[in-house]
Image 1 (tube, each protein chain N blue to C red):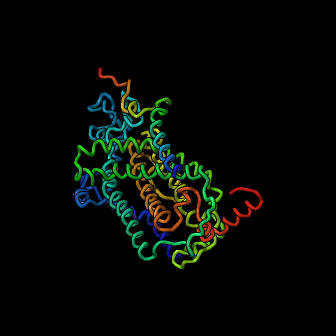
Image 2: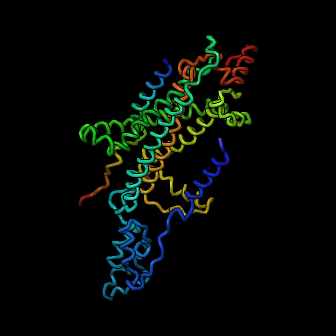
Image 3: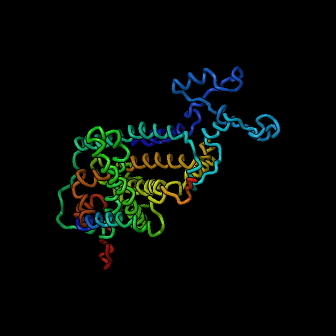
Amino acid sequence: MKVMIGAFVAALVIASLAPVVLSQFGWSSAEQAISESVRLD
Amino acid sequence: MNFKLLGAAVVALTVLAFSPAWAEEAPAVDRTATGGAQTLEDILRRQEQLKVDESFRSENLGDPARAAPMTDQLGTRGGVSDAEVWRSIRYNKIDPTVQSPGPANGVMIQDEGIAWYKLREGPVITYGGLALLGIVVLLVVFYFVRGKIMIDGGPAGTTIERFKAIERFGHWLLAGSFIALGLTGLITLMGRSFLIPVIGADAFAPLAAGSKWLHNNIAWAFMLGLVMTFVMWVTHNIPSKLDWQWIKAGGGIFTKSHPPAKKFNAGQKIIFWTVMLLGVSVSLSGLSLLFPFQMPMFADTFGLINSILGTSLPTDLAPHQEMQYANIWHSIVAFVMMVAIIAHIYIGTVGMEGAFDAMGNGQVDIEWARQHHDLWVAEVEARQGKGGSS
């Protein structure tokens, strides 16, 4: 049972770290919705 | 099991799925009376929710080659009228210049979104939900008909190591993340229909946001678990002649016999390959959804299917359409996996005495092992006799 609980905790740790790692690789979901190229002139 | 009947059903479903007749082609309509424009018949068919061949509009987009000279009236339009420009926008047949870059930003109207929304809110939820309820009811009935599968003669009291810690870790990483993905996926898919009427929109909002966060991020644990279990167990899951004997005996479920099996019996191999193949498919479609518009897969997949089966699946897909196909496919595959895994959870817990120990602490009763995996026990004992390990 220890292994089972350990695996569940590991899954949550991976889930917590995933956005941080993706951000390190230069990808974030927030950036997908914005663009610096939009001009309103 | 009647394999001829099963085979016939699979063939029939495949033929239906790819048959042009299934697509219910719209009949050809004579439009000479309207000069090629919409007819009363088109309007009536649309009102009756029948398929209408829209090509008389979607392909009537003007012809720059026949543009009037610049000096003529309307010559500056380049052979394309206002109506034709708007039709081009309506059917996403223009390539507009947009100031905000991105693969999807040039799509001004995405007509197929309605069909996707209706499919998602209708048949996917209805049939997916019924499949989940159906397997639960089936297993309850099975439990009362067959009862719990017990160890013949009772447990021996001595145990044998069934799975090492790393194997159990990989299994539970996959299982735990899959259950989280399944629940959060159902909340995301069905919450609007079933939860908001019960708990209200205000309570549902944080639940939906939390579900989305967990679903998107725990998916990586699922993919890691998938890779781990594949690497550890693939050699034990290669089909063999022994599996045929096990299947012919129905796994001994109803005859209360114990067909011979190695580390994994045919039933477990079916679960393994179902999880692996559908797991890869659900992961790919999930990645496509996780990185919007970055990983389009369906146009290429449809092109490959067309080249093999001679079908005419659409290959000119808007970026949004790619996402919609990925979403629908992701849901369908996930439902099939959930049905299979619910049955797997049943047999690994309440359905069979001693089965949970294999993944609980890794030690199973030797009598359970001899009854369900006799050849594996013989292999382990032979190795231990030579000083090896399991």
